Image (spheres, rainbow, N blue to C red):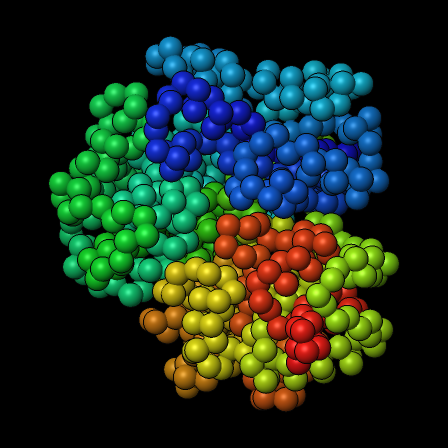
Length: 593
């Protein structure tokens, strides 16, 4: 069975701009349907997957993922006619929203109605009749499927938490013997994801985009200063439930669509909001810290109850909230569960995969679904394609080195010397993290390297940390990871702590509170990165590198060799290793060493 899954709501933003002109640009990001992506699943295996932003260069776009679809089909060797089903990760039903007001009725008709997706599919592939092959999958079930089916767990508790699905913001389910059964839902009005996003806006960052910045800011703050104030905004109930009365403070349509009523309440209780770009004060750090603590408290409240009720010792977690690596680390360290799996596409892009896997399990029960290893499901390029891109570029000196051992030895030397290396290898990662195939790498041993990359290359806030990437064999020695759980950290979705004895030596990848967002690399998962880490270890004694995504500020992670070379030159990086080609920029006096 061949299934094309996709995410996104094509005209969500354009509809809102037309209906509510004059809002701030950031307020048009308050909605649903961002992070569009496509995936092809055949016989229970993900054959290809990619986010549309990598093709359009518009970060977090919600546009109908036509380019990602076409590329995934091409790489899977399929045509539209070969598809048994097309699955979309939303399933709004008639009668749920239309009666709220005229605005909601029009939005259902133009944005949410599954008939809109049928029209978009027909426009994209007019030679096909999609009526019997289109499946609208409820949003939280698509998230749940994206986590449960690739986890490899036979029986697991499944938690989904995000801004909202169709009508809910949190879902607890049980995955057992290939089926998902919902135990509990929390309505959208009481959304942890929305609460965190509104605070993101209050703290001067982009809502539905910069929540990870708030997570990175929180360790600089005092969790206790605003703890009681923030926890008073949440009511923990019996049986693992909670409510957030604060989110009911919006009084009319405009306030609901902009969260202005909630922001007004925050200003009354916590003081003025921080304008974008304004200095970050200690108060802002303390609020971020209190917010992070509140999120963790609520998640643990839910999980403790349902773990006790079900007795399940494995957890699958998805939804936008599952991208909060700090909270994931707290859950892992709570020992509530023996194993925790978070898919690399935990946000809405992952519902493209989840919708397809849900249909696979529903329409062809008993099909074995492949356990996830590394999500290198994006496009890869031949040495000839890479060579063509390199040859067409001025301003670089390039050498092709067919002995990869020679490459990693040379690159390890560059890194030891303090140079910053862009690394473009194999298939592009799926999800928001660079997992060793589209990465910028550097020596992790000097904290000044973090400031150098933040300020000159990535051009981002100086409080934001970088992630360490480490071999599986050495992970537990350098980081507080229980032996035997190293592969849980393969997708860079959990924070742990750098072991105290190594914190000074890992100054560029250890956050202010001693934490680190670790990625563990296995020999079978990424042999080239594993070889580079070992080559660096041979020179320095340290099997760890600083790893950040290969992109510049405001740019999605690079997709093609052409974009990689252009970004390399624009970013002022020292070297680019792309396939078997090693590049350096050329100055007026010759190659830069």
